[in-house]
View 1 (tube, rainbow, N blue to C red):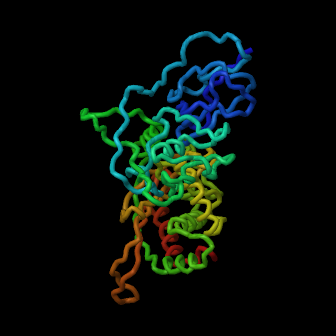
View 2: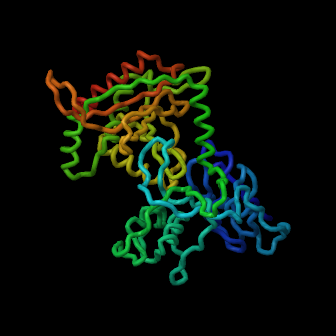
View 3: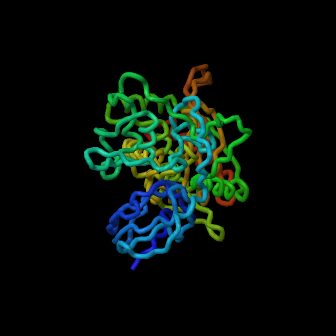
Length: 428
């Protein structure tokens, strides 16, 4: 008896998913737990696995289709079993005749930042037709759709490339520095381009369907900036001693600690002293958290995602540095698990590396606050009664006034400033 494969809710907030690529073709044998397809959710690209064994009898939808949760996408059964005729359903968002955007000017790779800024990166793999799997001596090379697309654009041979993804799969980071001759030398590989470039056809406009993550961002931001009564508090911090301490720590050669890592640690410790800011608005009550889980904004090719450093107040700077690097890397590859980007109690967004001196960030409901971190700049200030050049950094806190009052937020920032200006407070 045949079994329908349905679009599963692969994340807590998922309402529909885009089927990026089929991993099992019609006629292939299927075992329980086999990966049938890769699906783009509202936060990541995840695997749809088989819940029944048999043969892949029919793809109900084509690659590129957007399918609501619980709707059928395929049928598994016994060979020769009648499942009804007809071609697979057309992709809801697919536009087979649409022209591909032209390659444009190269730019820098994405960095941790507020998602409102344009972030250069590779083109969205979900908008491309599925690439054929590479073959070597009859064995299939395991590679993500994005890695295969990058390889095709650069003319790379994936044979011999060591994969660092799950089960040895080749992912984006494994192709860093590789060129067409395979040794990372010679002609430079093409630089990354933004996910959208103006079409070269001369037409007056081009309509690009919304990705799942962009739909979620639009919905979440409309839930925040309008209904949430937000006010902002800005403070300037002298980070001269912090910068010297960080340089000394990194000189030990046991991994690098960034200013963002230090800020995460300091915010976590300050929240422990000011639990009124470590809270969620829950409509008919306020939830004050006894645990500190810091969401850090990471810009990806299509917007923003906030992986969570859990129990950040209890972790060392090196632990936070290693975890934030790992989470940010997998966030850009769209490989985070739902539990890795949900459940934050407070957020941090950093645009300092993009030379932004000061900005305001949008609160991520149900959280009640977010810190916007600006660049570190040398300024002439009065220090110990004398003019001096000191490194300074501006922090702006966005507060949900339903949870955090002005004095409450100000006291939190005062504690945070004291910790950043006295680095020993972070390890005391």
